[in-house]
Image 1 (cartoon, rainbow, N blue to C red):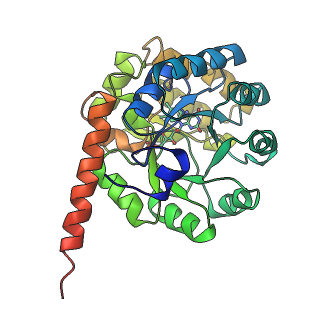
Image 2: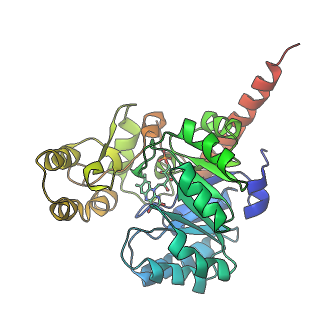
Length: 315
Ligand SMILES: Cc1cc2nc3c(=O)[nH]c(=O)nc-3n(C[C@H](O)[C@H](O)[C@H](O)COP(=O)(O)O)c2cc1C
C-alpha cells in the first residue's frame, strides 16, 4: 500500500487516476479503475450532454466507489457537460485543455472537488489562486493534446509553485513511473495511454494493438502550427496532417480534415485514417490486461522500487 494525501482527498486506496479520454474513458473503464482502488474518470470529450449523463449514471451503477468526470475546455458546449456533472452529483471534476478558470465557479459552488490539468508552472499558480483542490501537471510525453514541457522538469516546478497536491501525468505506465512521480514531489499519477490497453476499456482492438506494437519513437506531435498540438501514433493520417501543416493550409481546413478522426480509430477501428492518440509511454505497453491486475502490479512494483532505493542509503 502506498498512501499519500491524494488518497485522503479523494477517498481512494491507490494514488492512481485514470485520465479522462474522449471515446475511451467510458463508464466501464472508469468503474473498473474505481473498483480497483484508483480514481476512474468518465471522459465527456465533446459528447452530447445526455450521453454524458448516461455515462455518469452507468458508472454509478457499476461502482459504489468515488469516481470523477472530465471535460476538455476547447470543445463547444462545455458548460452543458459541466452542468450534467453538477446535476448528477459527480464528486471530482478534472478539466483539461488549457485555462479552466472561467469554468471553475459553478463547480466549486456545487462543492465539487476541482482538479485542472496544467502544462506550465504559470498556469498552475493561476489555478491555485482560484482555490482548486489539486492539479494534474501533464508533460508533453502525454497522449492527446499536449503542452511543451516534459514531465520530469514540469512536475517539480509545479510542486514548487503551489501549496496544493500535484498529480503527475505524461509518460507514466508502470510502477517505475509511479515511484518516479512520487520522488518528484507528486502525490499520485494520472495515466491515459496505459489504461486504453485494459480489458475493460471499450476502445477498438485495432487501437489497443497499435499501442501494444508501438516502440519508443512511434508517436509524434502535429497541429502545433495552429496552436492545437496533439500527440498520436504515426501512420497515414498523421502523415497527411504533417503535409497539410507544411503546405500552409488554413486552420479551418486543418481542423475539418481532423474532425471525427479519434472516433473513427477508437470506435470503428480505422487506425490508418483515424487518429490514434497515444503518449510516448505506448512503447512501455506490451499487453492488454484487466484493470485490477494492472493497478495491483503498478503499486507492488512502485513499493518494491521505493524499498530498494531506501535500502541503498548507506552510512
Ligand atoms: C486518446 C486520448 C484521449 C484523451 N482525451 C482527453 C480529454 O478528453 N480530456 C483531457 O483532459 N485529457 C485527455 N487526454 C489526456 C489523458 O487524460 C492523460 O492526462 C494523458 O493520457 C496522460 O499521459 P499518458 O498518455 O502518457 O498516460 C487524452 C489522452 C488520450 C491518449
